Image (cartoon, rainbow, N blue to C red):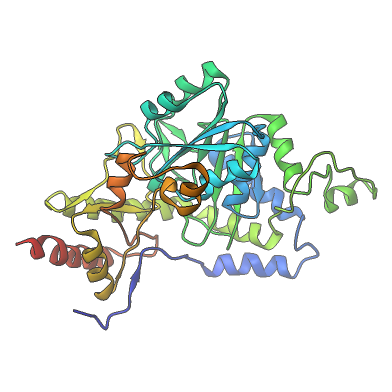
Length: 381
């Protein structure tokens, strides 16, 4: 049965009057890019995480690429990546001419499985990408125990987990390099944008050069030194983030705690309802973590039918993700196929992402629960 009610999307941005004013002030200023707001946003972000360095870039994929470069990933290297993630997590290794090695996930949480990592790690492995799927931090202690004795870099893809915590430590401070995204569906947005955090001074400097064509000083820095001189010291890209985007990001950062609190409130409502469902099962949540709930994912039987039915009834569910190794490019190029990552493959047949964003109300959540119950539980009767 179709509905005339507005569709409730799985995610959407939230932009306040204060956010708009922050952008307008920059548009009226002398600096639209490579100006003071970039550094201000970076400093505020680093202070929020409690870390030394935060480097802003054009988007989350650029952040992944920059992290691979700063970690020294190059041709001949291997980079371990979980199957259940957006393709950019693996593609970034290819940008550095390295080989992504796709591993399976834990069937309860859909996070990278440390046992699968140990099976696939080799002398050529130079980095492990830990993807905080849906907003839940990975088991960073277990991954550290694998990576550190081998001199392997740990890169956290935290594009889903800004505001999450692992054993009392904030995401962004748990890996050698941590990558964030500010796409509109994320916890805060800059339209498009990304950030990399690290405690390593040398890697931070590499990141700053990498986003600016490999050049050792941007326009503002040259102006402050009253010089026209600069040098390209390495191969880089134009991955800069503009000042007005950074102003938006910093304004949104102020309200991040409230945004996260609302997401957790919606998640609690879902958790309470689905604890009594037999045919709509939420993902597992590990002990000693605070979940950021970029996504709220359930597993259902007959997913294709349920997806279509919920969309018809105005519930904008989505699916995250087709496992990386099943994409045509990875099958053609690396010979991957069904059976290589069975836990991720089984999950893909069952997962649905329900609406989850900070402007949702409890009434919105109740509407979702009611429709899921009708299409999953009642349909099975």
